[in-house]
Image (cartoon, rainbow, N blue to C red; front, side):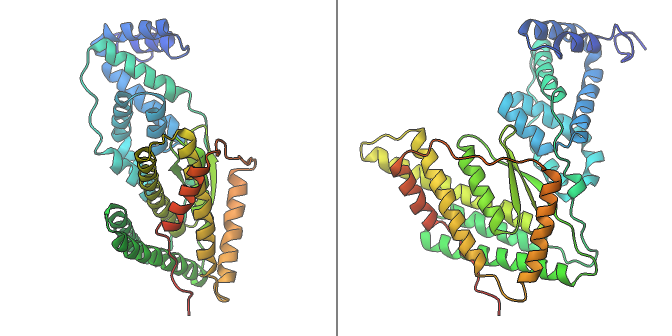
Length: 378
């Protein structure tokens, strides 16, 4: 093997490029590393292999595919997202054994476009920028240790959740309020039924499931208000959410059926909020008034606050004497899991909520949002 492709040889161009570019933030260092790689096409396989190693190291630090892609999209550009998606897909055959949630993230990356063709220097620069970011990823709370253990005799829930997802998608897409009301009401009824069935099944099982955890993206802008909304949805569905502002996600802890409901309902409510906010701003502009970031921040903050109240009341209607002990046991288990994963948390106060019109219209939009609980159990 020649010295240009031997990873253990100090003259290896990949090692020299890494030494030049990865451990400093200057543009000159990046240019120097990219020049080394651009001059030696034989280094490309080794460069790809090292990229897969960086991805594997991210998994060992507790990151998951969606987390990495989300951070790369926020910190870098679309071309970096395409490259890291390709690296993750290259690991996919080995990673699918990690479970259905991980597999779903890989399936989403399967439709990502391949990286565009560029000149060698530009491509090398892009790759080194990406590797700089991957190299410096800190450790996160590992979710694999908190993966829920499913009973072998448990019926699959995918059909129910597919129905719920389809109903919410139709409710969000229709332009007819009456149809949206009926579709969302049915989805909420199925959500409540699904959660209660899961809880009662756990109580009857010989060995109870343990809580699991997942990460849900909380994207800028107005991420504080979105985190409050997710927290409200999680709490109403017997889960707990812990927001990581630095990396743009919340970790939601709960039992698997409840986690899936939280993902569905949060997404639906966020779509409804964005649609209502866009219409409210259009009405403001038509009236000759222009609104700023504070209008949107106040709108979403009020929406999240009012949705939280509505969900809490709706959750209360599900409380029956036979169900209370089951849910209490599950909530203790969830709290213990959160305390183990996050021994230190802080409370964040919403900022920028100063626009009265935004607050009023956000609260009114929350009152119109499609959230309806099923009647109490007989």
